[in-house]
Image (tube, rainbow over all chains, first blue to last red; front, side, top):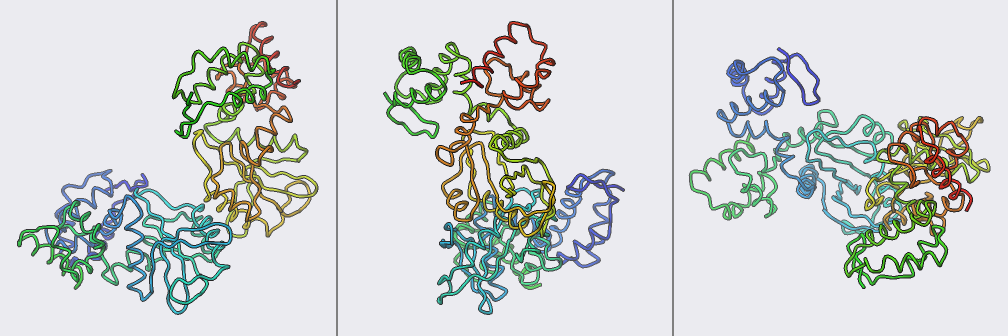
Length: 275
Length: 275
């Protein structure tokens, strides 16, 4: 059977990829195989990969909300938009769980012009600037112009010293982070110029999806038991991650939930955090 | 009387500015004053500056097509779009009339990635790259990110030598050209970083409008005696400027014009070239 990928390319449907993706979300191999069997009658030649994903997601949700939340992580990160604001805060958290000190939204005066910096991080006495590029469309790619202008920003800043984390020091590294993908030219230019890149699946096995799964730092936007309006209310209170939600219990208050819903939401959160 | 500028700002209507602009297009002071008198009854409080300009243009056209063509030069350059292709060719011509050797659309391999360069120019043994940024909207401005990524392109290219104009040499300068305006931050960054800028009115008294008027290098798109379809047909044949049009007479052939129209068009062209 043939399926149509997001890029429009038609490829042979690969059972094992779907099973791997389900297992990666926490489903057992038995459950993954059962889901595949259950959706099989609904598949047809030329179906889009997005539709296959949606069918599997529906089934997975009926088995375990937490597994479905993991499965929808990518959409959950897109749901931090449409502005880049919450994505920047989420990326700051991603560095924080890896042992960095972090500061967000800082204005610094460069050699030529002043800059608003999304995130600044420090670890092992090295200060890095982290520039975030949020795309609301799943198809958008970060092209070579972005690392090119970010490199000029970095070069405009790295000649001077700033007091960012208590003592005066220089910015020695620069990260470029996106929720979508980089073009191959963007990767080539960034690597050749000494910029560090982070995207959904880059670097290989160390992209955002890997870090999130490794540190269990799920954005609340991937929870399947909350409505979009409830998520928005939580984000407004700076409740960005499932971990935050479970550790600052006051945050639930504004949602005015029934005991029954509260129980289901906490169950999904706990399953996500204690895999 | 108040008028509304393109930016939305309301200002007092300034007679002298309109007169200066008409004189600048080749009208005598007597004609300019007469036009002002003639449009006066049609002006009203809160009229847009665009409407005032259009009324004056109509009157000017009835006096002299060539003066009207000069008056509509800015629109004529916008009419080279919507793609940036003809604008790049026109900018190459702008350098050519100033004594530069020029080459357009060249691929060069930089230190990190390969680049498609719009225009390369050479004068006094210095090779410069010229990057063109065409905007189809009159309100669009070229912001600071553009000189930032252009600087990175330049730095990726200026370490190597290339055989562009016969002998092997390095690119030592970089121009950024736009048909619209630069933001103040873009100008600040470019000047501080050693990039040269050219826009409609930048550098002051040496912008595109000044060069065009000084060298009489009018794009055919500002002629008032040709239709849009006829202009398109001429551009397709690489007839970019009024000078070209008058020096390669074959170019008129495809237009299949009546003797009478041909006479009027040539009249406008001659008036533009022999001011």
